[in-house]
Structures are given as structure tokens and as C-alpha cells.
Image (tube, rainbow, N blue to C red; front, side, top):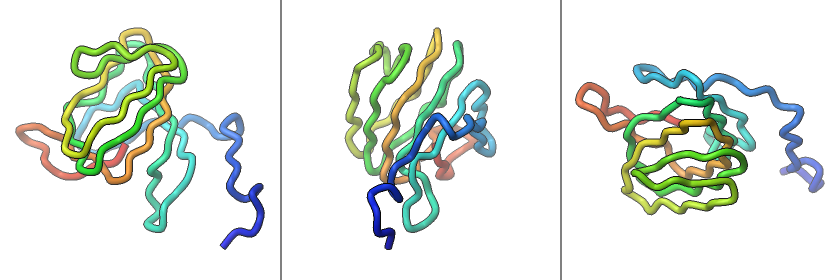
Length: 126
């Protein structure tokens, strides 16, 4: 176990944005900065950047999610979330995400999301 609080601080300005890559779905224009890893090596806390016009497909949150808009705006199920808006999505809630003008989100997701689609039913992580 780490012994200093400094071991748990993440300076996000030193992390490069990485393209979000998920097999079988279009994630063009979406970038990620992982903030921490869990015991399985998964990042449940991340920053997400959507470029103008980017979208993430309809998906399920088996364990819910928390989302905070740091910059810009996004649309979830017809609701516009502006800078400073917080969203708690309960377990089992399904939605897509689009950003007409771009945004940066703090995203906390305890379990991987499940993409909903006719040809794509496996679990994926964002």
C-alpha cells in the first residue's frame, strides 16, 4: 500500500489525451485520461473529452455512473447538461451521449458499460 497522500494525487495536465478505442463501435472524436486504476487494472474514474459532433452509442450502466460536466455541453436522452452539471445514472439506466459543440466530463463508472445494439451485446469500457 502506498504510504503518502502524494502517491494518490494525479496532475491531469501531465497526462496526454488518448483516443478512446473500443472494438466494434465508432468512438471517433472521443478521448480519455485515466485517473486511477482498480485492483483489476480498469479505470473507473476518468476524464472524457468529446470533440464537437462526437457521440457514444446507446449503452447500459449495470452499476450506475456519475458524470460531472467540467467544460462545454453534452446531451443525454434529450437533456442538455452544461458546465457545472452533475448527473447520477442509476444501475440499469440506458442512454447515449452526444456533444454538438464539445465537452470535457469527469466520469465515474463502477462497472464496465454494456453497449446496446442489434449486432453488439458484449461489455465494453469507457
